[in-house]
Structures are given as C-alpha cells and as structure tokens.
Length: 401
Image (cartoon, rainbow, N blue to C red):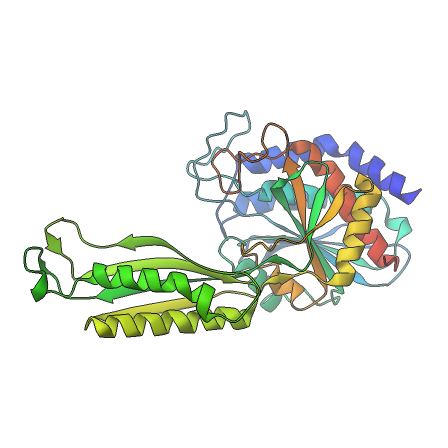
C-alpha cells in the first residue's frame, strides 16, 4: 500500500516539480554564488509540513531540510542534490531558457534539486509511516569541488544526528528515460590535473641552435606521457592522462622562451593517482634535463573516487524497480572517470550514487552533459522523487535486499 502512496503523492506534485525545475533553470548561478537558487529551494522547503529548514550553509548558499518520522527515533538517511550551474551560454530555444547571460544548467543540477524537493514532499506526506530522520541536502559548489567539504567541516552535516547512509543521483543522457543505472563499484573516478611550464631559451627561428625550443621539449613530454598509463602503471583499473591545452609563442619565426601545458588525470584508485603524479614528474624532469631546459610543474589530486557500497547498491536497485518496474534499474559495469565530490560523503558513510535516465529517441546521444543544448526529460522528475522516497522508506524500515 505504501508503494502506491509514494507513487500517488509524487504524481500529485509532478507539475509543481516541473515548474520548480524551470524556475531554477531560468536563474542558473555558478558555484558558491547560488543566492537566488538557494532562496527558491528554501522557499519551497518552508512550505512542506513538518520540515525544519537551515539556510546559509556551506559557504553561504547551502540549504538543508530535516524531516522527522512520527514513529519515533531511528536511523538517519541523507539525500543530496547539487545546485550550481556552469559558465555556458544556453542555445536551447525554450520559454524557460536561462535569463543569466553566460550561465546555464547544462549538467542537470536544476533537475537534481527538483526531484529531491519532490522527495521531501512525498516523505512529508508519509511521516506517520516511518521512524528516524531524513536530511535533504542542497549542496552548492559541486563543480568547483568545495561545497561538500564545507558542509562536512563547517556545518558537520554528517552529524547531529549522525548520518547512517547517503544517496544521490545524476541526470544521465546515455540511460533511457524511465530507467536508472547504478555503477557496480565506482560511479566516478578520482579527479585531478596538472599545469606545466617549460622554460627554454627564445630566439630567432633561423638560428635554432642558439635556442632551447620549449615546444620541442613539450612535444616529447606529450608523447612520453601517452605511454605512462599504458606501460608504467601497474593496475587493471582504468586511468587517464589527457592534455587539453598547449600554448607557446605568437609568431612563426620566433622561438618562444616558454611553453605551457595543462592536462587532466583520472583513475579509480588514489594509489594510482599518486603513481601518475610521480610519473609526470619523472618524465618532465628527465626530458627537460636532456634539453637543458627548466620547468615548473604543479599536480593537483582531488578527492577520492565515488565508490558505491554493495549493500546500498542492492537496496537502491530494489527500491527503484518497485517504482519503475522490474528490469528498469540495471547495473553498469563500465567505469566512468568523471569526478564528483559526493565521495566526501560516501567515503565516510555507506552510500550509493545512481544515474537517472533522461535519454529519449530525440535526445539520446545528441545532447551530452555540459552541452549548450543539454536538456532534461521532465517526465522523469516525479518518478525519481518517488524512487528516492521509496529508497529512504526501505532503509529506515530496515528492508534489505
């Protein structure tokens, strides 16, 4: 009976969720500047019966709602939505397109916020049915990687009461609308990057023997780094070194003094990330020394990979199929090396990160994340809210699968 109630309440608020999502979409704000976004979320939470609302969290734009079940004390579940947008000029021709020039919800965070608000609405209507506590966390600054850390270290979001499990989901274009995918182990990889400045000796292009060409050095470093992940790292897990920017010089007949390179590094294991960082240092040191050049290298390793807890995977899959139908939640074995600071939570308490399908016949394979024409299949908002609500109820009721 409760599954039916979950679906019914979610269906009742479907149009409201669509309007909330569109309102958020019209007012996208960058990481840690989500002022109007936070106001919309807090305003919505305050209308939900029995919801306690906390504002000005994290760096000032985080919002948290807390709901207590009426059956008494119990465990605490946290569901999280990220709320920041991207510095992208929207190209979608829709009536609710971005009103902020150069800003767009091109990663679906407007939908994430809407379906977690929907989860709050559903669970508020079912307070008589559960014990324990639910924390609805609307996290700023996911794209810059700072929001989760601030919530944990400044606001102690995983305590008072202690969080026993944490869940989140991302709108995912390569999963069909009406389905949910769950990574078998790693939902996201360890993010990192590096910047390298090669310092040579400039001069006229007709006298290269009087110069130390930093471009020559850069090309050799580039080639050497392509072999690092394939030959130098002892791991069966995926790993990546990608160089996306190389800059040097302004004229074809002048050898420049310097050349800069910027790249990203990814892996699923922190030990592999550290190995990659060491190999970048070794390759750079050896090749620059061979050419009598100098260098400045900065390697940054971000947070841990998002690793799904096996018990939480089973719970999420069963909870999703109870709402979406058998076979509409499946396990994804292929590793994805994008980064997500949800790992700040899931490395501390058991958690699971899901991929909500938004792919349709019209959009699938065409409108990827961070695209200026990225769009959400809005019909997934209410069902996803129902999935999250069912998941929370199953966890707090002690149901395990």
